[in-house]
Length: 399
Image: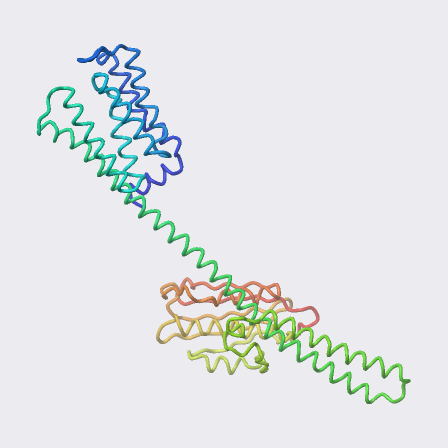
């Protein structure tokens, strides 16, 4: 930010102080020159009159930031009355220039032009009062008015430019936050669909087993058979309710599906598991290796899917941003209490171009957060990029 920008920012934070400072130099000048200006060449100007006139010219400046037009009008009227009564100019008459600057700075151009013409008229009236009307004198006096006027217009243009930049920055920040929220919502909808497939499979198995048990039991009385039928009916009801609720979560009135495929969320193909990691690594598009440490544990299907998607997203990022010749390493470390997933590459790392339209990390955090884990994605100190995720292993499933 340049000097003008810093001054503008400081003045916005200390508006009342700026109001007081605008009139302070004129007040000080009026006190210093009080003895030299108690008598005018025209009508007599006594000390009391001098003080009152100076106050009438300086006090309105306290409102010039909030009401620039009214301040200029008040100062101009006082100055005109001073000229009409035949009093000589006083140092406080410089308040006309300060008020003119405020109008040029804070008002529309037509008001700034009108205020400039009025100030030029004041210069002419002062010369008439002194009986020294000439082109050279009028030109000299006009220089101060024109300089003040142009300075105010320039400051006004700069202020509007800075306000435009601030507005665009705030709008860009709001749009970025909105995109992040939309990405999180879309990812939750996708996760809901995948969890629907995982849970639906288990519930479907329960329904099939309950139906089979109902037909196979012939030693027990009819009451047992009815209880099995109730289990089957309850399972079917729960499955239908779960489909309905998850369908509401992923429904998109615009395109019929959370992923924008127009399918209305009816894709029930089997979801990948950790058994397909070898296939994923081989088809990642970059040379990659899979390294598994520790005895694998039987993770729930939803957690396996989360690990699969994290590795898929990390390999995709390596392909997009790693650069030519990038290689990747996928490591799964099974521990007693957690599973550590680490995907590293030797690509550009911090030198890779930033992408502002991707939300892969948002999706990773959503998936890992469901299981109480944590994930990080950052450039490596020696080059390349690293995605690290830690997911707790459910009790009783560790090898």
